[in-house]
Image 1 (cartoon, rainbow, N blue to C red):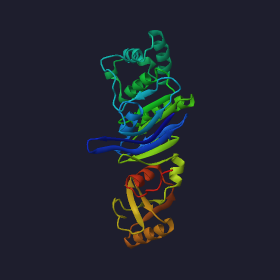
Image 2: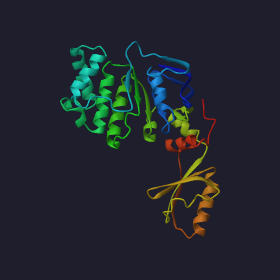
Image 3: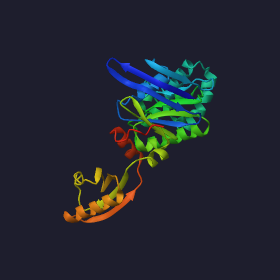
Length: 298
C-alpha cells in the first residue's frame, strides 16, 4: 500500500527526514515510534501528500478509494455538533447526504458515539474527540488509514477503546499506518519502525525486535529506594526504578546477578527478589534512541 524510498525533507538547516525507506503491506498495522522531533509527523505528511519531499520516491495505493487521514491535533469544529462535523467532512469527500447518514450511523456504532450525535464537539472528552476525528476519516470507507499520534494525551482507558476499534477495522481489511509515543501501543502493531533524528533505525515485528535485543534484563526488589544505587556497578549498563522494582540492563545475566547480590550484601541491603525477565518494547526503544545499537536495519 505504501512504498517509500530514500525520502528526505529539510526545513532550512533542519533535516526532519533523512533518506527514509519503508514499505507498508496490505493488511498491516504499521507503527511509527520515536521521540519528539524524530520526524514521524513530517514523514506521515509526505505520505499523505501534504508536504512535498525534497528527494526520494513515494508510491501510495489505496484500492482506488480515498485514504483516511487523522492529524495529530484535533482539527474539527468545536461549535458544531458531532453530526454537523460529520456532514461537513462528508461533503468535503463529495458524499451525498443520504450516504453520509448511512455511513455515519454505521461508524458511530463502531466508535460508540451514536448517542452523542447532537453534542457539541467542544463538549466531548479528549478520547471522544479522537473518536469523532476517526469517524470523519472513515467516511470515504478507505482501505488505507493514516493516523498521526491519535491517542496522544488521551487517558489509558480511552486509548484501549481506540485500539479495539483499530483492530476491528484491520480485521475488516483496512491497512493502518499509525505513529505513537506509547510503547504499549507499539506492542499492538504488526510491524514497528523506530525513528530517531529523522532516520528509520529499525523495522520489524515487535516480537522480532525484542528477540534481537542484544542485552539481558534483571528485575529486582530490595530494601533500597535509591534510584541510582546501581549506576556505578560495572556489570550494569543501565538501571531504572519503577514503583518498588529496579530494572537493570546487563550484558550477561549470571555475572550481573552475582555482582548485584554481592553489592547488596556489602551494602547490608536486604534482597527480596531477583529474576531475569524478557525485554519490552520500551527497552528496545531506549537502546535505539541512545544509539546503543546501530545495525538493526533489515
